Image (cartoon, rainbow, N blue to C red; front, side, top):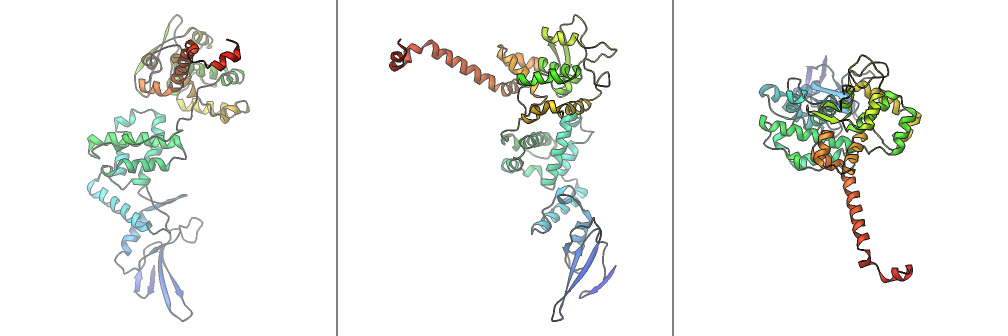
Length: 403
């Protein structure tokens, strides 16, 4: 397309057009814009460009060609750009474009390269993660690229990392998952030359990031009344063994007379042998016989091929009117794992014993069992006060009670 103006006749690149503003005194001002899909419902906002013969014109056009757009605005090679009306739009875009070119020339080790390399299926550290963890980490990786994709991991400070985490504070669970991924990513990057240390280790979690609570008695009552047996059975397996959802689904049916059930954890790849509680054995014995070796059957299949198929069925159950209170009080399947930890601690098991059954570290047992520890301290404190009440009882109390 050819356009003539003060700069003479020039060949304009695709999507570039010029607008002439005429003033009342006859003077004219020519503006140059980049507008992809102009005059259609998918038209981009017009981006102002330098004059065609100016030095930065071709660079700005190349930047525009490299851009993408979604419902939130403009991206360049995955990097989220400021609003196009803000003064830092072009400086940010130019920096991202320069990083894109540099990456192609030198294989620069910026955050975009780091995330993509870590999340590659050729990376055994990535493929060893469970499918659910990878899903969450993929989302966090996309956010990292949008926020700092063109920056170097070596330049990240603890303050920078905390600021990114805090910006997600409205959704604590997402913020803490983002923090977990960023920390794992940085630790992975240290021996691979992306950075010299992991500054995320010293950041703080967002309070309220753990949405699950142990199931109260009313939750079990609703489950037993309104859920089909196979869903009740899965919940009971989680309650008695303390295993993660995906590991429960993958349980193999123990044979008659067997006193333990073997579980291989998808997350840690470790196998644990869990003694079968007598009450749990009664549930296992109620499982209908079929030719599957798996303990848990689906509503229409002999067993669940993936944990996702169970999650879909479980979510449909939770969407029913009978489970409205579950939704209102945020009772989720993972809370059964907390029930298991609390039950074991309540009867006097050590943290190591609980960890051996529930397949979790002593630190995680402590985290899950904070409420138990507080209740235990409170009981011990009250017992002590009961035993020495005569020493501290105010005399007015004695006179009042006639003692």
